[in-house]
Length: 378
Image (cartoon, rainbow, N blue to C red; front, side):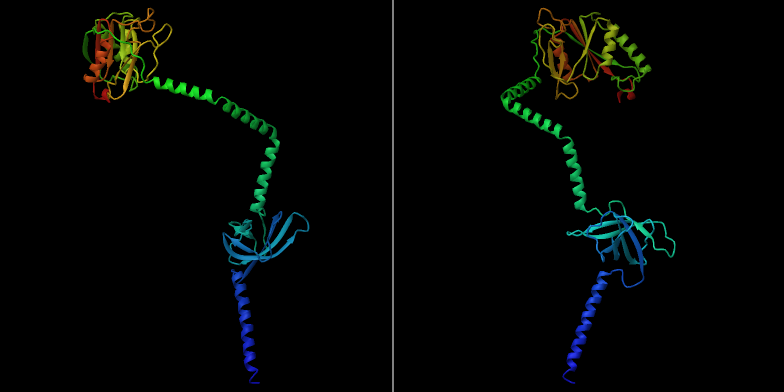
């Protein structure tokens, strides 16, 4: 008897260890614990690939139970009925959303529960309806998407073939005309390179005399019409330009040009209108352009000088200098040039006046506009 006692103890210990291992595995698998459980029925419309009895049940991503039964619905071959057992404290409602999720690299299916507000009647086992397509795996979803793409391609196979054929013809045409395209691009590049330096007509050495006149605008009238311009400013500006025109010793016809300085455009136009209907008006511009001194071309001559604002960028005046062609057209040449500017008198305005004096035949008048009050100067 004494020799057999150790074997009985060892066998009992091994049996207890095996039972402990099975108990631990059951506890690990059933994280809902051994406490009170609640049972629910779940209906799936369609297949539930890979779902097995014992699969986990998650609520808002937390495991609360497992699947206890699976079967086909006898009244509908497409429907799958499942029974789940979850911890009784799980807040499952009659409108809780039910879906099928696939976890891990192998895509193990689990039943996923989420949300819900309506409370079921006491004593009845609620039946939860899974969302439509809940059993579709990622593979099935990708398969369906590829099927739709294949359907679209098959329905439009003719237009796609035509498009590919047109692209082939276009690429072959480009390959055949590579040399011509290079020549066209080179020609465009050469044309653009010539634009910043428009040809400037040489002027006579004699220069017309230059007179300077500072004019203070009426109170509230800005030099630029885009600043607070209304009926009151319009009337005051017309009256001021009419009074100024009476003091200028220039011809009241096409022999006189009123030239605005860059953005200063409207007041020079009012001054030209006050001088006479035949008086020409224009403005300087920052835009370079090609000039051709020939009949019918709109830009015949060009003057180039530094901007009166900053002196760093070039500014151009077109058709101010006289054309050398027997039919001057748009550049007839002017006896009198009236420059209207809001820039202060200084080296830059003096240079501009000198350029104009080399083109005018008789006189150049520089009108320096000054604001009448602080509001107009802003």
